[in-house]
Length: 143
Image 1 (cartoon, one colour):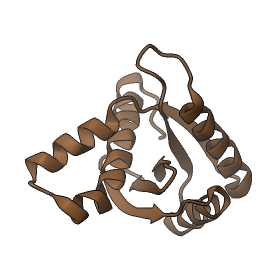
Image 2 (cartoon, one colour):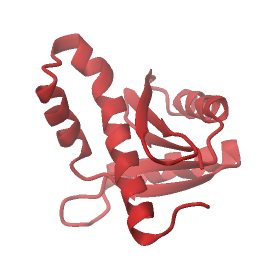
Image 3 (tube, one colour):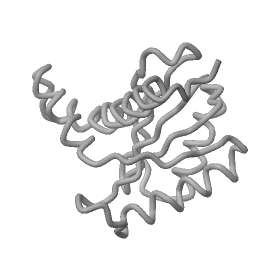
Image 4 (cartoon, helix red, strand yellow):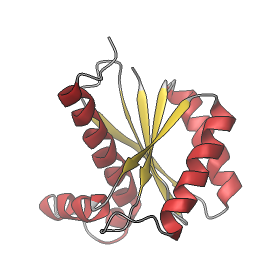
């Protein structure tokens, strides 16, 4: 199944995708858009372009597991994205993915403007990898 993941942000939204084999998550792009509705439209267009059969939206719960304002905004984004695309959209716990993305970029010595341009796509990739691992480990993979 082609799965697209979204790391939704107020200014930048990272996009990653995996192919039908569900083996490798790859960064696609970062949408630089502050307007909620325009970001939704651009994300929906990418889902269509990538032929996504499922979309995973990062769900930033607080460290204690509670739902804050940011998570509520991501839930709204996911709900509206599903309406716009007609594709199943799932929320996926993304705690610490941005930290992991920064750590990965430290390893590759990616700095400055280049880092800012890719960190959200790397975070989306980490979200998707986590979801794919879950599918493999629980036998939930599509056949």
